[in-house]
Amino acid sequence: MKASQKSIFASLLLAVGLTLVALPSYADHEKGKAALDRKDYASALREFTESANSGDAASQLDLGLMYYNGQGTPQDYMQAIAWFQTAAEQGSTMAQNDLGSMYYKGQGVAQSYAQAVAWYRKAAEQGNAYAQTGLGLMYYNGQGISQDYMQAIAWFQKAAEQGSADAQRNLGLIYEFGKGVPQDYTQAAAWYRKAAAQGNADAKSHLDIIDTKQKMADTKAAWDTFTKALQAEMAKNIAAMSKLPRGSEDSCKRVGYFQGPIYQDAPGGWIFYHGGGFQKDPDDADLQCQLDGRINTGSLSKAGWIVVDKTRNADEYVTDYFIRKSR
Image (tube, rainbow, N blue to C red; front, side, top):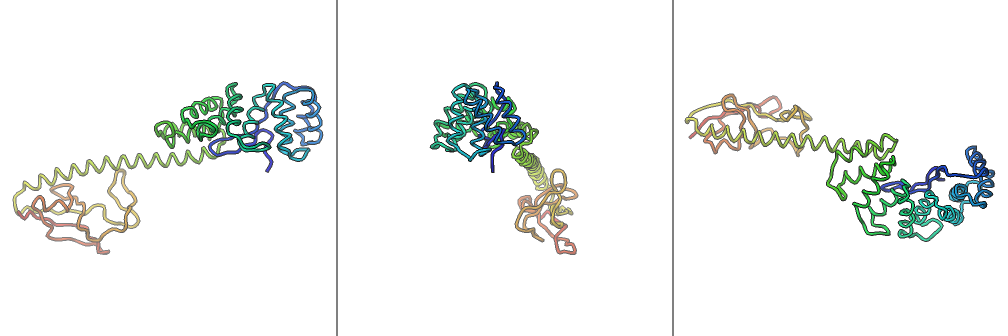
């Protein structure tokens, strides 16, 4: 598939591509742009060639892109490289970025991450957001340069602040997975939202994942808090029961027993049951007693209590326990 005239991206963590923006140009370049817009590639190629040969950097860049895409001419990476090089030497940051991309991908030249880094850096230091994103990738992966997450973050940040959706998405990934920074779903979501607002589908997908992860973390935190409080309550109740006189009795309802695909007794109400089945008559069950409050059958013997009777429902699940102080 041909790359767009605006960008040619090889995307893993971010876009690394050939880009076209407006530069000062000759009249022939404007004619070439008009021809390109109406997809008259033969005329565009002729106009760009004439203007490029006259030294116009914008035409040299566009001519390189036409050779890259095979528009109006057979695809020719060597010609693309040659025209990008000519424009880059005149200071075109777009051409410098595009050379970085071609060295990164090994198109028309032997693949060289070191050369990719050099061209990306030249453009990135002049403020080119695409090159800043590309340089960030090289630091992130340790390609052509020592791996350095902090440098990757710094360059992604520069590009993101210029509105690069790819850099914003990449910062989201870094915070989501804690690369070079503490894992931070809030920061990750903030960057994903910025990228998603610009139509970045990958950021939108990760934003949905982050939302699910955050809900799971919140649920786990609530469940842990609930469990600790419940355990403390049970220990207190059992301690009080151990002090009651022999022969004391109580009626208790089993809580949390199976009621179809879900069961009750959790923060906020119903939760899904996770496990390998639910026992009809367990050795260890949570009970809510009329006099003694919340307890667990596994702790009864420690307090001198025994189960003297049980009630079952139509499905043979034990629902009620009757207990007595035996010593």
